[in-house]
Image (cartoon, rainbow, N blue to C red; front, side, top):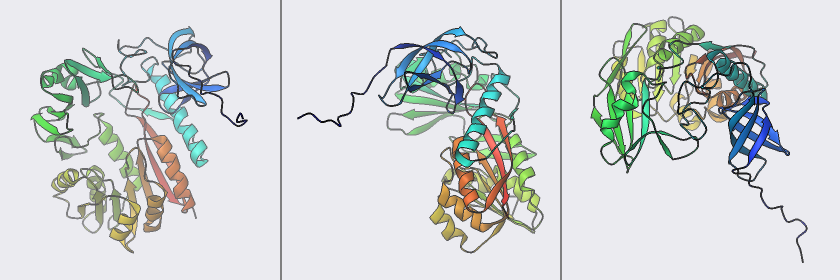
Length: 406
């Protein structure tokens, strides 16, 4: 007997060519179109365009993915990509090389606004601010993939390595030509990091072990201070990002002499140093970070600020609650990973903070979800700035200031 509830066979449009009217930008470096009742996420296009696109990935559900291979009607703001690899089937590192810089920032603005409204019910009419240098030759850290004799970057949503002769968003000191000599060994990637000292080169072998093959600790100068970053440690990839972010955090926190500040996901101490100078020796900064190497660097970087202390802690809700106990802080700054802080941690922060929370975010969707969690805990968004610290890509950095809702 036949099953009247049997599902229709999953449709697979992979390889199909579609003629599409592009509607709006979506989070992730693609735009939205529709065909036969299904959503199609299309790369290499812009809102308002009409394109022919080839479906590249189809899981059989309500949507599929495609690359625009021909522009029938172009939108204002379209330009020829300066990079020869920023094409369908090419390098997946950049998302918006086919848009002029002003259009890129407008696309990012639209994504931030849409995520805030959809996930947090917040209307935001700000702009994504331009940050020099850009849009080319700005990236100070690069990780190149290695596959046998091929050194390059990976195709979008693929493990395939695209061989390249140069990367136009990389600073010359970290271009692929610098990485190539280190790939003549059994490695899967070569990472280069530039700063005020010679370029640090590290390789990753097939057992995912990291080896420093050139250089050592890197040094960066920000707002009158030097910051040491151990080889392989995290530092913003845009050369002026740290100055922009530290300045914005300082402005939003407005920490006063004698106040207590909590710095979460504190890295090598960039914000802790700025906040420590604000509160002075009559105040205090507790910087909590999960990575042991970053904590060592932070202690070195904060050695002249006795009011700023760096401790190792896996920043999660239960662990933070145990560490803080009943302590309260005038200001809390957090710079979580791309996945965000999550509701439980937001609730702990909300309970332990008196005056202002400053949230540094690299993903607008995670930021919006966490802002909704903070709203549930009695805090509201007072201000938000967005910065184009990753030109040619879909990534955007935001800094939000939250205050008690009452």
